[in-house]
Image (cartoon, rainbow, N blue to C red; front, side, top):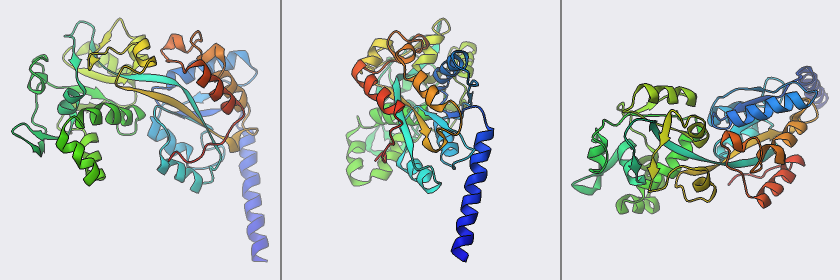
Length: 348
């Protein structure tokens, strides 16, 4: 009798959830501020080309999007989340625990993370080590590399005598941002491991190594500027001494206002990101909740539009917005996986 009641309760709950989802007639998308402009263009094109409603998209940051996406199945939860880094194992496990069991992962292209300043401000040529020393919470003591101390550097010239004598002030994304995660891994850690003493720490204490390499200073030199990259661009225009961190697409779209610093001698350009020579580049993603496909109208068609050559190829409309396309071969493979809604395995 008890089992029968439980089964009936579950069935009733699923029926209510299905009815609720059927009542929503638009796709609900959350996630990365970097992917947001690309997804928005696709959504607008999709809305014009089809009989489906234009999807609702919220820029919540990659981490915020994953949290919302993985909370469950039903009309109150997003159908798709955008991300500027890959889903973490912990996020995948949270999804599984909350009934979001079948997820389709789609790599849409590449993006570089730019360190930029106002168009008329001094040009910067930074090394990864310069970036780490300027922004890390703890750095090696200049007099004894084996010892870590609270970051003492106030100006860029103190970090590197060849850099401008300007106070370190960097506007960047918050911890919920995939851009912040990728920047920490590619730029901060890239500079961190140029110190042999810290590099050796990785074998001895991986947790401490990550804390040192990814830890960002909290004394005002790094300013969390939220998920709105356009706001960072505006602040750089207003303050020529400040630098900002955001995706290449925003640099490309605002080339009349800001310019990107060279990193290890390589400028952030379409070609340098596409060929992998620019040191701070990463893949961009979106994730689809398969339980919503066939219930929320238009999900399959939206995915097809996003992964069409018209959208994401070298000659597609997303390239005009700054997306660095995948190779022809990888794009064809990814389109097939996306359009067939292939389920991903754990990202371990």
